[in-house]
Length: 112
Picture 1 (cartoon, helix red, strand yellow):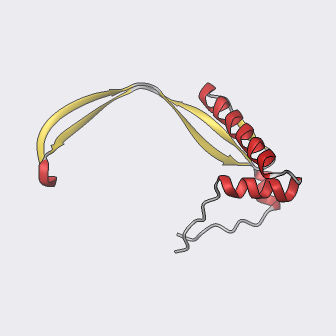
Picture 2 (picture 1 turned 180 degrees about the vertical axis):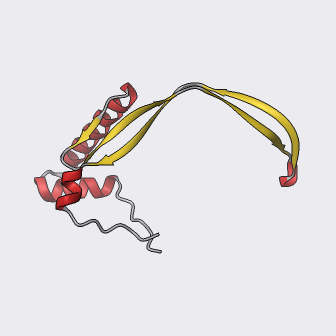
């Protein structure tokens, strides 16, 4: 199985410098602006469109009650004990690729 490659901040900064002709400081500022825009949109629960690639789609998970029938003890031992927790409603995001992107690009995903 081929391990997935992580694309991080340095990769974005390098591409901004190479493709846009930005100097390092300008590329860092552009990256920080992009990340803060995404961060603001996600904290508001917005639908985030990422160009022609895809979108981050929010969905609200309703509140629910969770029951656990055990408690962990020292040494990795478990003991039977009924505990109940209440999880509030939560916001989850899923990334959805646009059909047009999938049609026009050959995807090289790691085989699992």
